[in-house]
Image 1 (cartoon, one colour):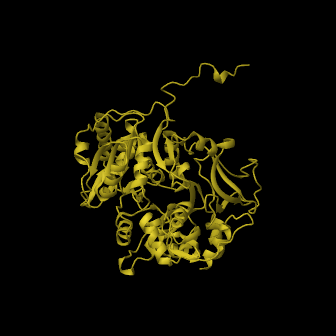
Image 2: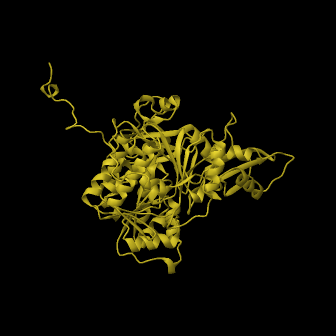
Length: 541
């Protein structure tokens, strides 16, 4: 029998439109045209101007031949042009590829080629590494140089046109439209590359719109909230906050560099209500000389991912006026999609017990449909007993489309109808999950993912090294840092300083181990390195 609700009730333009975060900016510009959208140095950009500049960018890109499905790559810090790119690029149906500003030239070149970049916007601070990368890459994109007029950089110009001139060639009334399909790609972000080249994670308009609104709910963000950009926007599109602030007509306070005094000044002078960052951001705030700190007349919400903060850091942050909330997610989930939702009754617990609660990753965002701990082989859901370890899995609209040009990896990640995170954890009786290990041995240092395999491969190439294993060592400032355990060849010698310097010659500096321990590496009967023992050894150092 046909249901009456399926007869003559069809989708049409009046009752169905594709979800996209682009509509948030047009609304904010209409309702609050004179409200300050962006603060950058002495510059103030209203929502009217922000929208017009984004449309200019879209128009200029269109004139340059950029259209649906084309990739626009950007190498930019947290500056206004990065925010404009989050709107202007997808307004023409193109895909925004934000590159990590700490990458080396070879990885950048790989990403440019893999993404088939048609146009690149690059800040002059990064011209040296970008010049090398562009020489290595096979693609020959249009190059646009960004000059930060608030904080001028002396780097070489790589293209024939400046960003502001490029914008002026565009139309501030450019008639953009929503995507034909909310499943269309909006952005491309690369993983850290744990077993070779990084994988390209593709986001769609629907997911970006939902997580952008989910951030408002998770962060309890009121209208006109003020957000400080301590989190790099190249990280998972800044956890979708470039789109979130338009939902509530909030103010973006740009921060080109994460430095102590500018952070405190920005928080106090602009009334910052929210910021995000890795443990290193908390350490930077707390270690600021007393003379450079500012008294805050309001509580600031601080959202952190990566390794859970130590009890001492949580207490110090609270004393300084920050309420810390622990989040968890992956590049594949648009950034954090799990929150340690704090319960009022936990405030009565002793500090040590509160810290135990704070260390848990938590429960799903409202924008995520389901979160589970399962046996990755049988796909059976495991007990909520806080003890049975399984793989953390996600399901919902804020999970990526898949990996670009990598069907095999996508199929593996989505096996059984769930996204497999590769992280191992437990679920407590109250439903909150807690990570116990990372099956891929990823080290999260200062918010950056570091592949232990990559560091091991580099150290192993040293002529004196017979065997090496790299694990995470807890660090108060960075959250975690790489710690290398090394066995030398019988007839060779090397010091810890020698191996660290070797790494600095072959890796980005943040990937280099802080500690090198010369010791016999514990192994199983089959010769497999027992990294769980090494982690315990690293903690004891």
